[in-house]
Image (cartoon, rainbow, N blue to C red; front, side, top):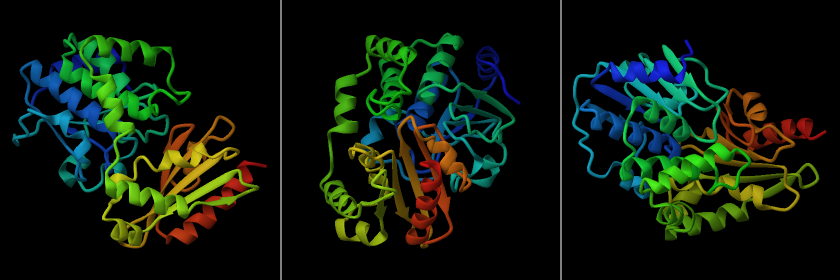
Length: 314
């Protein structure tokens, strides 16, 4: 059941012992949302903690710095920035099957939670910010860091069309509240590990063009991870590279899983709806950024995606 902001605030204020779930392959928005909400609830004297099915990349370690992650009996389960139950990954089934509240910004949300706060903003962290204001929470510098991280990463450092005037107003208030915007932007967009740099070089070498060069596809294989010492954790910054090529309208990055299946990240401009393309394969997301899974190898997934791209670009 969908609920409004005020009802969501009243609901959380009435709960305690709250477990916060983030999506698999965590990014800045799901982690920023989760840890901002956790810090806010803790500031109100409530017990809360954040869990993720996958290891959290080191560059996000500041989001959880100083938090007590001790376990406690869970009374209420909240998912943040998670459009479908499947995206929770391998979190314990006892939590995956009893999500009491989902706070999200994806129009493709599958309504799997008992209650859903869905506002289609540029980042889920915008919704968390509005929720915390409604709850009367003071935005500390640590909460501001978390929320700014989610907003800047989900908007590509404010480069995407999804960043509107509300996004900038919220970001400005977060900076006034102590968010380290310059430092966060450097960590998120300018700092690269040596292993990532090697992986990026191989990824760019793999780029192929289709549909009169209007579609660019990058493939990342397990062999590439092994050759570079990198891992799937470091692929977040690769997906946007396909959109940087002049004339490309659909950029796709296909990542091979250890079991031979794969996942695809889709990036587009205004002419093509990325979520529509992802939905053809059971995925979803935003109009210019979406994702889907394939139970096939990389080559087969590429063929199927390129075929559909040809249809959309007619």
